[in-house]
Amino acid sequence: MSSPTVSIEGPTSTTSEGFLAAAKSGGCAPSSYGSSPTSPGDVDPAIWDKIKDHPCFSEEAHHYFARMHVAVAPACNVQCNYCNRKYDCANESRPGVVSEKLTPDQALRKVIAVANEVPQLSVLGIAGPGDACYDWEKTKATFDRVIREIPDIKLCVSTNGLVLPDHVAELAEMNVDHVTITINMVDPEVGAKIYPWIFYENRRYFGIEAARILHARQMLGLEMLSARGILTKINSVMIPGVNDQHLFEVNKMVKERGAFLHNVMPLISDPAHGTHYGLIGQRGPTAMEMMALQDRLEGGAKLMRHCRQCRADAVGLLGEDRGQEFTLDGIPDGVTYEAGKRQAYRQVVAHERRDHEAARSEAIGMVKATDSEKSLLVAVATKGGGRVNEHFGHAKEFQVYEVSPRGISLVGHRKVERYCLGGGGEDATLEGVIAALEGIHIVLCAKIGNRPKEQLSRAGLRVTDAYGHDYIETAVSALYAAELGIRPLAATA
Ligand code: CLF
Ligand code: SF4
Image 1 (cartoon, helix red, strand yellow):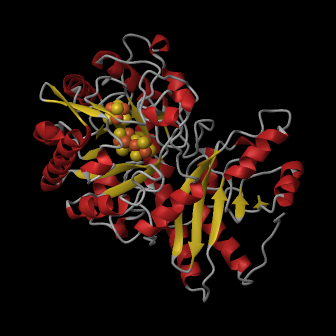
Image 2: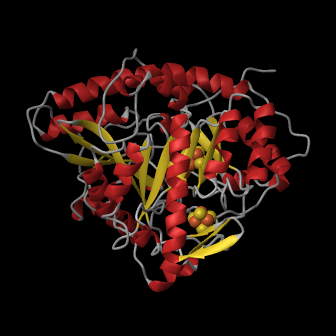
Image 3: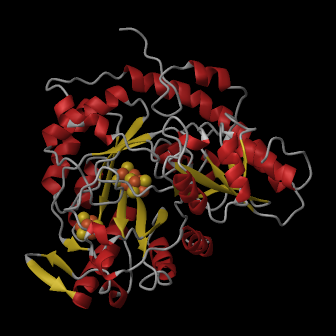
C-alpha cells in the first residue's frame, strides 16, 4: 500500500506539503484563560491523555481533530421546549436534527467509510437524534461493533441524564470516558418552564414533578460518573428570561459534583423549526449576551467556548459538517477499515502541535508582559490547524479570540453565510457578515479583496490579511502589540 499523505488543514487540502512548509520551530506549554484546556500544563497528565485528541473536551484539539455522530438513537424520554426531532434540513445545525437514521450495522459501515476518508477523525459520538441512554441497546450495539474494528477511536455519549444512572457501569466497562449531560436547571420551578413532560419508569410525569425527577437523576448520574473518573461535560441551553441567571447555580452545582467542563449554548429558536419556543416567540440570546454570561461564569466550572451545536449526524472538524458526503447509498457494503491515513495524520499533528505550542507560549508571554488594560476581540477566519488560513469570502464562521494582559483565549465563534460563491460576493450577504461581527475590533483572514475590505471599513470594522497562514495566537499578539504602539500594524484597512 502506498503511504498516505495528510494535511492538518480542512478537507479541501489533502497533501502534506502545506503543513511541512509551514512547520518551523519546537514547542512547550503555554497558558490560557477562560476556556477548556489547551495544553498539558493546564490539567493533570492522566486527564490530558484522555482529552488531548477530543475536539470538544480540549479547545486545542479542536484545531486538529474531528468528531462524527451516528444517528442510531431516535427514541427520547423527555420533551424539551427547544426540540422538534421531526424537522430536517441540511442547512440546519442543532441537536435532535438528522437526515438519515441508522441501524448499528449501518452505523459501522459509515464510521469505517469516514475513518478511511477523514484522517482527523478521533471521536465517535452518539448524540441522538433522541437520547443515547434511553435508546441504549442501539447505542451499545453500535459502540461494540465500532470498537472491534477501530480500537483507537474514542467513544462519546450525550444524554439528557434521565436514565443515565442505569448505564454508568456499562459505560465504564466499554471504556467510554467522555459523557455529556444536558442540564438546563437545578431548580424544578425553572425546569417546568423548559420540560413539559418526561417519561420515566413506564409513566409520564408533567411540570414540576417531571423536572424534580429529571434533576435528581441528572445529579445522581453526574456523581456516579465522577466517582468512576469518567470525564463529564455539562451542556446548558441559555434561554433568556427563563434560565439565563439561573445558570450560575447550575455551574456551581455541577462543579461541586465533579463536572469537567460547562458548555453554555445559545437557544436556537425559529418558528419554522416547529419547536414550542419557536412557536411562542421565545428568543435566543445575542452573541454579545452569550459572551457576557460566559464571562460572568468565569471562576466556576471550566467553560467550553468552542461548541458548534452539532447535528446528531455531524461529521468533520467542529466548524464544518461533511455528513452529506457520507450517506449510506454511497458506501459499499463490504467496506473495510484502513488505518494508514489516520496514523500518518497523527504523526504529522504531533509534530505540528509542538510547534504550535511553542508559538502560542511565546505569543501569550508577550501579551502578558504588556503594561496595559486594553482588551480586544479578534475574529479569525480559519479552516483548521490553529492558523489564519481561510479567505474572508470563503469563511462560514469566524472564531473569536480575546486578547488582553490576561492572555489570548478563544471566547466563541460567529456563524456567517459564505460571502463569495465564485464570481464575486453579494452585498446583502456582506451586510449579514458585518452584522454577525458585532462587537469585534479586528478581523484576521488569509486573503480579502479590496471591495469587501472597503465595505467593512465603512462599517467601522478593521480587517487584515497580513498574517495569512500564521498561527492564530502569533497573529493576535502581533495585532495587540501594534494596538499598543509596540510594533506597527501592517496592511490594516
Ligand atoms: Fe459529539 Fe458531544 Fe461527544 Fe463532542 S459534540 S457527543 S462531546 S463528540 Fe461538541 Fe457538538 Fe458542541 Fe456537542 S461541538 S454540540 S459539545
Ligand atoms: Fe430533543 Fe434531546 Fe430534549 Fe429529547 S432530550 S427532546 S432529543 S433535545
